[in-house]
Image (tube, rainbow, N blue to C red):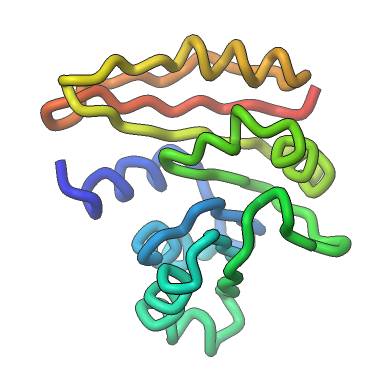
Length: 166
């Protein structure tokens, strides 16, 4: 499965409705950002890499110009969202979303009532997917975790975990 196909799979699981406020952590080239905006979401996307932010901004220039997307080069732990609230927070292959107490506290502080954190990943057949371990880590940080959606995708396993602030 290529990156675009994997990200299409991931964004489809977010349940984005027009007008949803979305935070993408680790936006990379901005492929998922494009998909979010095409579904009517209003997006803030962050990535540690300025190069990735530049590429994502270029790819999504029309969404940026229309006020539907904003890209920032910053780590989740260092981000300043001021008083912004998000209906959907997600990341694909972003360990800070289950390993970083500071990052998870930041997400919790900016998650809108009823909002959800989505942790998505795909691992090749040569690696072991560990959605149960990720779910347990989220629960240990006080999140209410639903059942993980685990599917064979391409030559590996993909999973999506939805967590809500506990």
